[in-house]
Image (cartoon, rainbow, N blue to C red; front, side):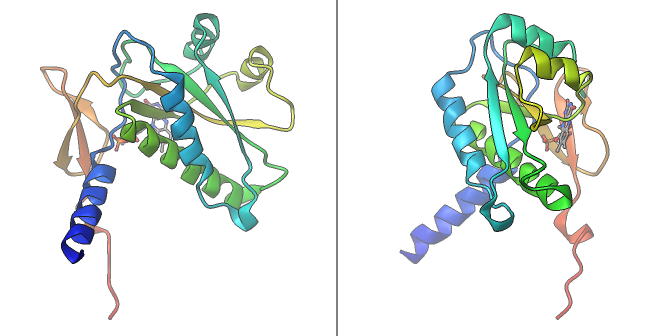
Length: 190
Ligand SMILES: Cc1cc2nc3c(=O)[nH]c(=O)nc-3n(C[C@H](O)[C@H](O)[C@H](O)COP(=O)(O)O)c2cc1C
């Protein structure tokens, strides 16, 4: 039993650390059932007094996907077909820092849920013209567009390396993602 527990926690850490932002996707659209499971994971995130201030629009249709693509910015140019999860925040229900914090926790759970479904995701915070997007997607006034999560079948395997700074593509177009070693950022007081 102890052995099993060890394996489980080891696998869990490995699973979390293996999640990468994916921007190159396959030519098939991801299945709605997997997206819904990932969103459900997002909805199990902690929130202040369990206020759960999140709502979502899943965008699969070509016309609306294009409208989103005209408004978002990618760190690395994207490829392939992706659906979009538009993550909406009821900032009246959970305002300020606490609202932003739990919306972030929700987004991270969604990314991990997509990863568990064999899909790749990318959290997009750079969104222009949110008001016109709100009209196109028929989003009620009391909800703000918090973020958009692109998702699809992963067609790249980013490499982790030690360091910090922006991810970059090498000559072979492989994405490298520098991560700071844990010891460099943690001070323990015993
Ligand atoms: C709040 C937030 C906003 C982000 N916005 C964008 C974005 O607009 N475009 C993009 O390509 N990636 C975006 N990313 C993804 C980051 O670039 C990515 O998480 C970072 O490079 C580390 O890579 P990793 O997720 O594979 O660890 C965002 C991530 C976060 C947490």
